[in-house]
Image 1 (spheres, rainbow, N blue to C red):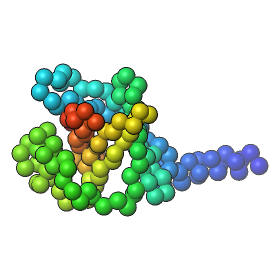
Image 2: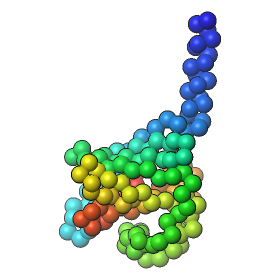
Image 3: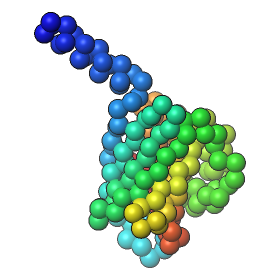
Image 4: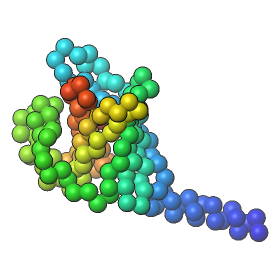
Length: 150
């Protein structure tokens, strides 16, 4: 009976990993992009948990402030272009139209902290990156702009 239990544990773990039901965590940075701000990256911990029909995203900033929210797995890319200018400001003129718009892996999440402040985050997979890297932009409630990435 012990052998049967030991065999089931790896099989169950493989199933959970394969279906994306376990949370993943990765080093992540938010780089302040506003004039006069310190350009040093803010190390942020990005945690993504894939559920049945949603993706839960949690970003914890160095001071411990945590923003979280969810995105439906079948969510279409954002129809509006609220942060299009931010993409171009961070990555260069025309970047949004050339690389982000129409990207199959492009999404927006509105994350909130305990006080209700919002962090608007847009990410997409880096074009041509064989490792599936992501990049993006974020804007906080105070209107500060950040480059998001590794």
